[in-house]
Image 1 (cartoon, rainbow, N blue to C red):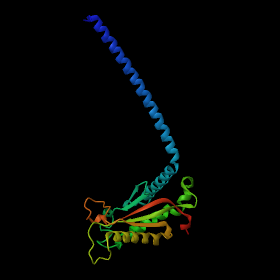
Image 2: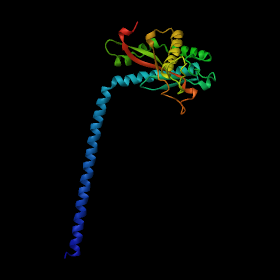
Image 3: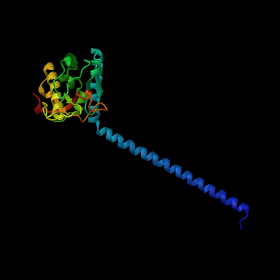
Image 4: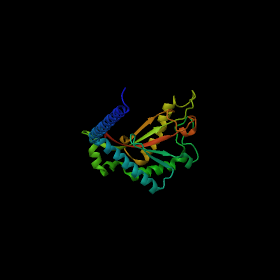
Length: 241
């Protein structure tokens, strides 16, 4: 039988070995963490360097957003909501609760409520002040970073139409909510085109039917709406005038 002194000595040596092992593990973990952080940093730097056009595009969108917010305040357009979506450009929506106290569109109709025409005219003034045809020239350095051969830069005015989820009657003017939403987008686009005098290639439309409601109840009138986007983009040169 081992004496008590021998047992205590073995316990001390075992404790020392354990401490040495723990110290080595701590050093190994610290070294591995440092190497991992170094490689992550290198990879991140490479990715950032390789995505410069993407970052410059996002700067263009952000510049357009900042200019829009500043101009909105300057013109006193409190009813105009401005949002930077990054991927889709700058989104503009009309707050109907602050405007005519009526819906922009009647149920199953694409005709714009005449009470909204003064606000649309104010938005046209807003677009005129932004001077979209020369926007790329004012940010030429960023545009040059994303520009590719046989392409040109422009800010497209994209109008997206929406409906509520009410089914259309068989006698309705439109065959589906998709068609109705597209005609709503077209109605607003036509007014903007008429009042701004911009060429056709500055405009685009889309209809989403009732698939993108903004309220919990998709039947509510607030879903009968349009959203307007200003989208910095590259287009083929041959599509221009």
